[in-house]
Amino acid sequence: MTHFDCDYMAGAHPEVMRRLVETNMELTPGYGTDPYTRQAKQLIREACGCPNAEVHLLVGGTQTNATVIDGLLARHEGVLAADSAHINVHESGAIEASGHKVLVLPGHDGKVSAVDVAQYIESFYADDTYQHMVAPGMLYISHPTEYGTLYTLSELEALHDVCHKAKIPLYMDGARLGYGLAAKGTDVTLCDVARLCDVFYIGGTKVGALFGEAVVVTNPTLLPHFFPLIKQHGALLAKGRLLGVQFATLFTDNLYLRIARHAVEMAMKLKAAFVERGHRLHIDSPTNQQFFVLPNAELDRLSAFASFELWGPRGETETIVRFVTGWATTEKEVDELISNL
Image (spheres, rainbow, N blue to C red):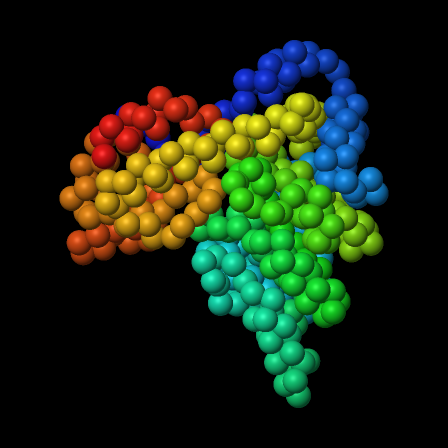
């Protein structure tokens, strides 16, 4: 049985685990005040080309989204996001639980358009009763999206311009950012993300770490009291050096992008095999998430050899499914799945 359910089924990359074991018995101060965390933050600033950015290491993706969004919004504001956005669909109301509303925009293959964002904001303030309504206080995007799709550089620049004009922050969920940056043909770099987003995070949980996400605040004035907010949201790790060691390792010798590139290469091999055998793509993703429309008979047959996700409810005759590769996916596992197609 091979497993393609998600990209965090394995533990940590061996190099990350080696460094955790090597440093295991060291005594360091807590809450991210240790030298490994300082090193990780500096390496991330250098990789982003943003020497003045603030970097915070948090425990997981949902905690990160809830903490950042709560910190960026005033009490009367909500967050603009695509209808398929993770915060709208798969975070159990974490944003609403902090007192903020997700303001839904139409998604285009998982992405939002600058035109839709601008129209929403313009229409909101054109309404004479807008002070009785939840104001659009920020924009949330993810890169890659829930569908594995990517923003182009021009699309990101257009979103940045709309947000800048409206004086609202642009926040990027980067849970799978490594796989987006490693995708073939993308024109978006980590430095572009840092230049165009006010806040974003670099996902570790899904890209080689045991757990953890690195929040990069390129406009620190937006989150002046972020540390206590992290603690309020249960996202602060007492043994903070565990996060520092992991991110310092991932951002040494380009490890983060190297292992992400491997995952994307495995996904492309998988996609090509499905297409060659006549299976239809649900969406053409250039990253490690691949979506196919399978006849139910084929779905049931493949389930005996591999685990994967149904993307929504099972259809009457065919069903959308998702196969996900990760840094730990081996070519042998991909070949084994392909042999059973």
